[in-house]
Structure formats: structure tokens, C-alpha cells
Image (cartoon, rainbow, N blue to C red; front, top):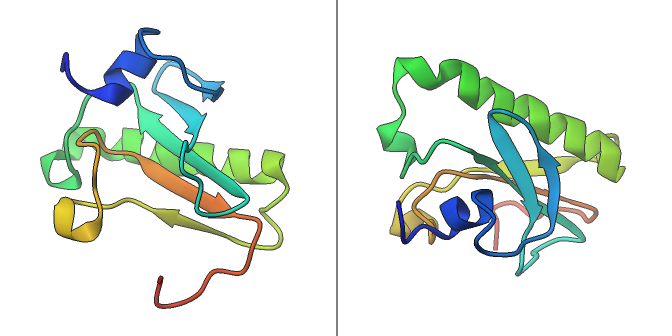
Length: 114
């Protein structure tokens, strides 16, 4: 997708603070953090929404969560707690249509989210 910001970051055309990269995903620091630790874990494959996932993506989705867990440990928020969120479509807050997992930690999280 030529207009996708995450694809541009993946391909090195747009700068970002990349904190993790492997053959299935990469993670960046959110440019508008909602918590002291706010990372985005993004698959390298362009998948617009959760609704576009297929059974063939089950290992990829698992990998995103395992990567988030690893990053939470590295960031020192694993034991105190962290939130993982994947928004789907505009009414849920999705602004970039390339799935991504938000990892938020470093502060108490309110419920329901405000």
C-alpha cells in the first residue's frame, strides 16, 4: 500500500524509532504516547483491519502477542501490568488501516478506557 504510513516505515521511507524488528513484525514508539511506555507492534504484511485476518494469519497474530510480551519485559512493565489493544475501524479508534497492537504500560490503566 503506497499510502500506508506503516508500510513506509517498514520500507525505510519514513523515519520512526524502531525498537524491534524480525521477519514477521516490527515495533515502534508511538508518536502520541498515551502512557509512559506506548509501543506499536506491527506486522510486516499489510493487513488493513482485524476483519481482514484469515486462518492463515493465526501464527502471525500469536507472534504479535508474544513480541508484545517480550517488549513489555524489556520495558520493565510486565510485572506491574500493561494493556494490549488492537482497534478495528474508525468507531473503535483505528486511524491507520494496517493492523497494529498497542502496548501501553508504566501507569495504572482505567476501565473503561477514557
